[in-house]
Image 1 (spheres, rainbow, N blue to C red):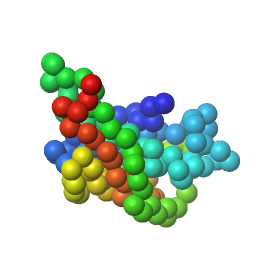
Image 2 (image 1 turned 60 degrees about the vertical axis):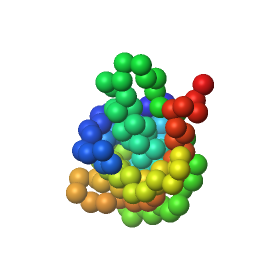
Image 3 (image 1 turned 30 degrees about the vertical axis):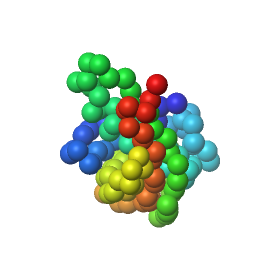
Image 4 (image 1 turned 120 degrees about the vertical axis):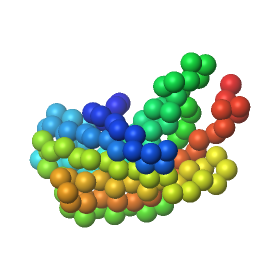
Length: 128
């Protein structure tokens, strides 16, 4: 299930994506977007960021990775359906194969959610 409508690389450690939600989208109920969907949007923005790096790698296959922890996440206000959010990610640290990612969700200019997740991204040599 792809939750992103667009992605833009800002730097080696930062990226942003957009998602427009409609009433028919997964995670929309009662006129608002479910808060848990924002964590998935951040994780998919991280995946898009890693995938973007592989575009010019003719021998490469998609990077393998998975969300392994949510260090913290805070919701500030509901997002109504039929809204477009902007998802900003920044890699803040790397400890072995674990990457710490700070994610922020914006509705227009307002922050609606923010948190930090941990992604496991093994070295390419470890993948069969």
